[in-house]
Image 1 (tube, each protein chain N blue to C red):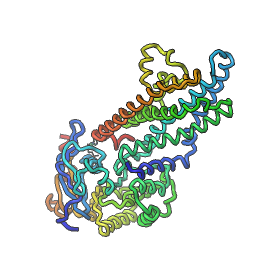
Image 2 (image 1 turned 90 degrees about the horizontal axis):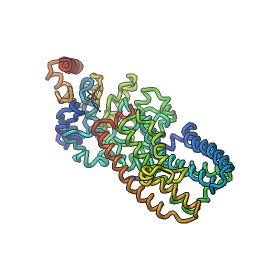
Image 3 (image 1 turned 45 degrees about the vertical axis):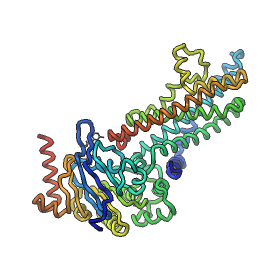
Image 4 (image 1 turned 90 degrees about the vertical axis):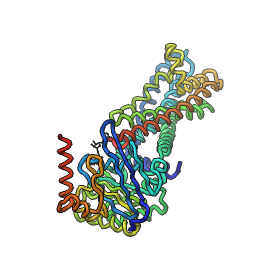
Length: 251
Length: 263
Ligand SMILES: Nc1ncnc2c1ncn2[C@@H]1O[C@H](COP(=O)(O)OP(=O)(O)OP(=O)(O)O)[C@@H](O)[C@H]1O
């Protein structure tokens, strides 16, 4: 990973207002090639809204998003071809089998040699025993793995992951983290990652950005953030900022 | 537009039908029942009203053509609803898929459903009532094409409303088209409408097709002016409704509704 390489993602003064309510407020940050960037913040901090703007699903009120040096609004198709996402809260069509769902995604992104690519991803995520199952019949952990499989199948250069290990048992969660690290190292994948598991955040992220009530309040390595707030670990920083949010909201 | 993305969506929906008997039934059940009920009513009336010429031809022909319009509309709206029910809209619209490709795929699904329904209804009409829909002759082709496009117009319009107002507006998928039925003059000539409603009916492309059908069946003449009106109106309304779909989509993205529409 090189810190001088031009960023794959550059967000400048990103703001989103819903009526009078400001969900994201002048957020600016960058993500470098091959970097895992943790996006932290208490409930309602604006993480999901930010990711949805980065995926072109929500239009920003102001500010700009540049991906691979291109403006997202102007080059949506070219950019989204090289980006993918997975969220514990989004499912895949339930009436299709795991394999059918992956075929649809592969066609949607115009992959070649689809059967081989699906085999690879099924193997990587240890999904062999349920690849022919109808998605409706999967456990929540298997569903999460399917979501991740669809995300890495398309060989993205940037991956947005919204709590990717939320419903996984520790063993599978470990396997997923290892896989993501491996993808990062082998293919230079950049990942923007949200999680409420602070240990995981510290372990996974090269850098962390911290949102609070839509504002970016801290940015840096986990250790730098912990030092800046004078706490012993990230969990304590999180609690401190989350309680500040609650206090200021109730006042 | 990229064909592979349109094909991906078509395959996604064909997979759905591959293993779902209720979905397949849904396509054929209502048209079949319509045909049975209206077929018998028509036979009964024909026995007592011999002075109305070509009674069976009028009614069964109209019924089959109406079901074509209805299925074309459903092909669009139900395809969208399937994505909404599956909470798959975010997966689709966060991919390189363009709204135009999405619409093209729903239109292709609509055509597939229309073909399936037309074949089944055509065969049933022939078997049960010895009625051959092909009596309408050469004009059947342009009639069907225009009705499919009118179905798309109503379908895209309904889809936009569901996208905008969410799952509560879902019922429109089945009811909206019936709002157009009285002014489509499916089973009666346009002249039976009150004068003010006739004005409304004349801007409905479907009304021109059903009028055209009656012209062919009663006089055997070419319904050229009706066809021309229908083509013109269909073209204009299709452009307007696709524009409306894009506007609704932009509005939903602005309000953050696109990702919440299934919730
Ligand atoms: N479409 C919308 N309309 C109005 N308000 C919205 C909309 N979407 C999000 N919000 C509001 O914006 C704020 C940020 O929401 P967001 O979902 O981005 O938070 P989050 O950080 O992802 O929270 P969580 O950790 O709970 O998922 C919340 O107060 C939410 O109610």
